[in-house]
Length: 138
Image (cartoon, rainbow, N blue to C red; front, side, top):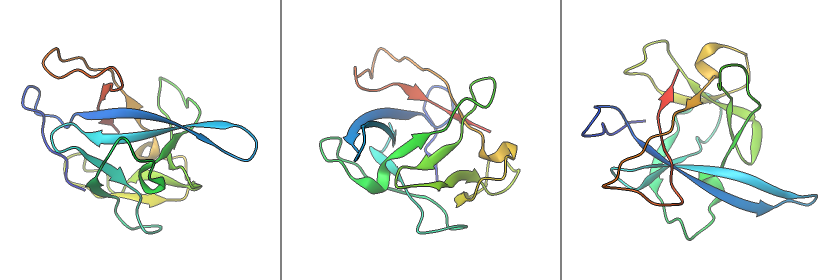
């Protein structure tokens, strides 16, 4: 997965869109991660060990392949990020190299490369009430 650097900080900046979707027993909260520079969303991988991809995103359409769920707080705000339709598959940094590694699906193994945090970001030039900027930090 390639990330586009943000022009101010040199880091990838992502928008966090929230979606509510009904399930058989309750209303469920999902998130979509969309790259601010390209408008593409983080799309599920096709299976374990396969990299996630970016795809065109339309915020007016609910597309299951770009919906994610957040696990419970594992300490200091870090959480697992899981595919909305299969919570057994976790977003995982495949390698310990923070700058050039594939982001893949993997079963939960409690390692640091499966724990993600979301940091708030505000930019007056590009602000949308439905969007919160974020970085993934491993």
